Image (tube, rainbow, N blue to C red):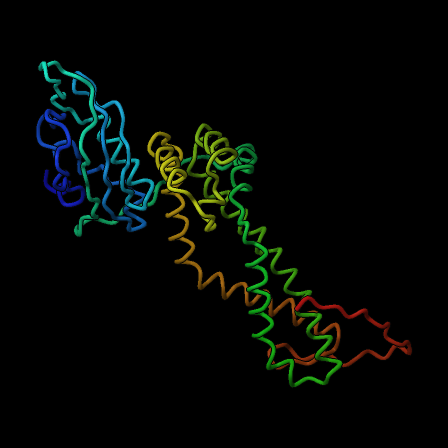
Length: 325
């Protein structure tokens, strides 16, 4: 089997519990092909052991697969059952009279292990047209992928921004400190909303360029029912049944498996660009803050020189000072 044998290894079966159980017809490792390792699992570095029992009919065909011990990775569990259901064949169990009967195998264990010499997997191609109609089609899917932790993320970055400017603000007079904090809160709100819109547009175009219309519709329907995106990707607890159900869905629906691979591609791209995006975001926040500080005539060392207050003969209107920082 070559490479295949290095990542899906049949382990010794448990002791037989019946006198004439189903027996594999041929070599178990022949059921496995080198390209069976799910690309999404390989990208994520997922490995593990899966234990299953198979229902075998009187003709030796597999009619059911039951995971008795999960690998903790739904896609690996589901791919194991898919392979065995499609390719495994047994000499059927026999009753005391020697007649072939349906029966369940003893526990069989398989280990998924990523080959050490695996070549890097190329990202899935962006081969779909990104038109206004297709962006509208993908909008419900991407909107459903929006993080339910957005408020927590906003709170974290708002606190980070506050801490970044705290020392500089502390050197200002008390009233200027209050104004500066209010200006920072307002500047942060502007930049945060800009970043959210940019992130949404980035995700929207990424998936629209890589999923065809049928896949977009299938995924939209999938995440509107059953195990949803937020449960999977935002740390919501999943039962063993939920994990197996999602794993089966990825194995049975090519669009779901493809979406998982695309998620890894997008994550890798985002991580590679994270530093540059962070620098750009900091620059935008600084520019927005300096603009507001200039309007309030508050000097800060990182901002261009503030022009003196124009003499108009009129008192500057009072401001209602509020801050969320």
